[in-house]
Image (tube, rainbow, N blue to C red):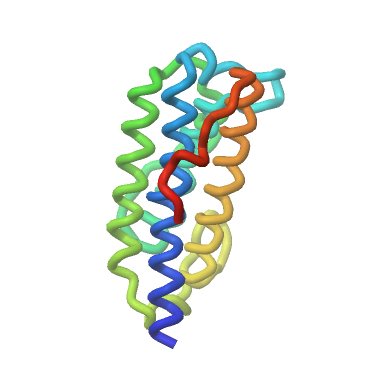
Length: 164
């Protein structure tokens, strides 16, 4: 079982750091700050808002939830932000949070995967928390890619990025 747990944790770390983040970075490389904060309508999120939301979610679920480290989050502000925070700052925030989460994940032992955590009003085990974060990050990465393609009307050449 420990081998399965190790594979799960390593795959989760790899998806986050070597798949999702590079795809988001490719989008940021191609977009202007105006593009990053563009939204198709008032009820939709911009790429900037989605990145802020990913930072908050990863911090709450992995850094705070799994790692039991202190954190501060204002979830609603992630969606309400309208200032055009520059691309470089968004990238820096995302990379910092993902690095913190990766540090937490590399310390998770297989014996901890079934231990309970209370995160964002949910009673989950550590495995469920990691799984939630990975699928949540994946979903929003897809939205960022779609918004980027809609805004740029060009191939993002994601296939050039490192393969898993």
